Image (cartoon, chains in turn yellow, green):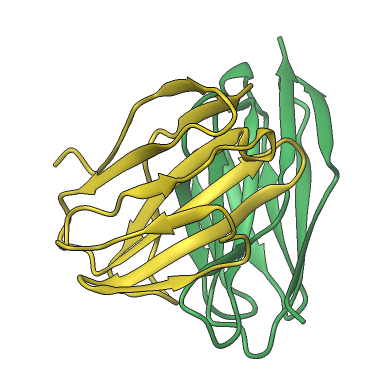
Length: 113
Length: 110
């Protein structure tokens, strides 16, 4: 099992550019999450999905979009990148939302200049 | 409103100097408290889940305990490889996700 994989590991964007952060899990988990982590701010939930075709907003969804066409994949789309989106992004998955362990990917470090 | 507060923000210990990290929480009906370890440049790695007051779990030099208001992560005779940020999290009330604290950054000096 590879667990949760994310690509790319690092990326530099210019203001106004767009990109997609990829996330794949091979544990057949229904629930998947996207977090951003800023220094001293903890993990903030951007979007989550409870299964293929179902997504919902988290605490900080503005400027992002997601889709979930398969159980395995949960890409995060940044449209019109802004400096405020400079952060480290983590994808996570779990079998049951409230009581099961979330497994995290290695993260994507994004810088918007 | 759900709250998770971790203290201290940062902790420096000499190798072998035992100490405790605190996670206090406010949620409606606790359905578990999670401890994670995060190394620089990596994703959080699961350590423990505690479900009820009085429960304790151990792993090597780490022991997690839970009361009705807080959890402690006790580190006994730490080694430099225990240096990391330790995060705690609770299931967010009425939601399908975890609410994370801001973490304690532990540095163990040889």
